[in-house]
Every structure is written in structure tokens, then in C-alpha cells.
Image (cartoon, rainbow, N blue to C red; front, side):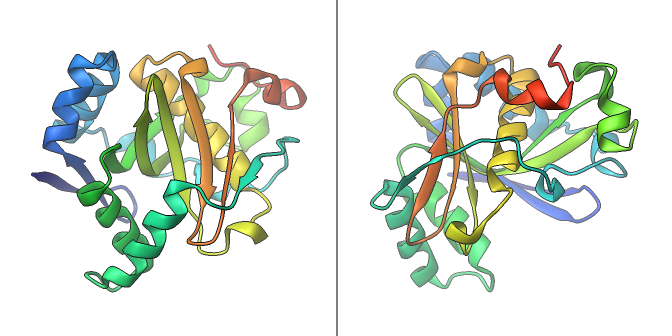
Length: 212
């Protein structure tokens, strides 16, 4: 039912997919996503993840003000996952529980990246690196005609830059999988609350970065 591969991207990331739900993507208007998830499962490049900037380490504010949702489905799933205790760490418990028992979670620790040429001439200046920006999506879900990028944060309400992280994750997924950005939503959550928003290129205005 679950496919699992360990990716050596400077640390071992456990990329997992749900076979049955992955198959449904192909028939529900998400074929580009289905193709991408399969492709990187079989042959994910290592080079984009070794030395460049990481989305999870971005520490700047883009002016995003996500909507707080206290009774979101992902918070309830997080509570159940944390009580599962199948793994020694909270992230794995939440991720694998959602992948196993939530009908809309299709993958966890999904690898994504953007090359410098894909963010315009200011990439090197902005990130202080010529190397790709990379990351791994904690939880990838679908909801009707939208793809959701979620990041599990144990103290979500205290996060200052999680919105920046999932915004760039959304850009990376859009580029790599060929999904229009307006079909993507993103957010972060813990067992108490969730924060969500629509990623929009307008948030790049103050950065001089341009998605190409």
C-alpha cells in the first residue's frame, strides 16, 4: 500500500507515497502531479539538495498573513497521529498516520527544488548562493481541484517564518510538477490549530525574484 524510499539529501528523508491514492490522481485531473511524484520516487536527483539554501531555513517575512483555522481536519489528524506512537519522532507519526488513514494525503517528504535560473537574476544575491533552493513537503494532500502543501510545526502558533517556507514550497512544486500556482494552497499546522493561505506571486514583489 505504501511505497518508501530513503533519500540522502544531506540527511535521510523518508519519501513515501500511497499507491492507491496515487493511482486516483491520474484519473482526477492531477496527471502532472502523478507523473512528477512517480518520477522523483524512481529517480530523484541528489545535486539540488546538497549545498544550496533550504526552504525550511528561510528567515524573512514576505508579508503573508495566513488564516487561522482551529478545527481544521489536519489538526485532528495530527492529534491522532501523535497518539499513534508507531515511530520515535512526532513528524513521522503524524506523516505516516495521515498517509495511511487520511483519504486525501498522497505523499510525505516530497522532494522539490528551484534552480537559480528559475527565480531570475536576483537568486544569487537574495539567497547568497548560486545553488538551487530545495525542500521536502511534509504532507501533500488533494482537496477537490486543489493541491495542498502542508508543513507540520509542533508549535504552529509561535511560528514566524513558516508561511515563507510553505510559500516557496508551493512555487517549487508548481514549477517541478507543472501545476498552475492557482491550483495550489498551502499552510502549516500542529494538533491545536492550522494556518492556511493561497500562494500568490505578488508575495515576491519585495524580493525582486521572478518565477520563470
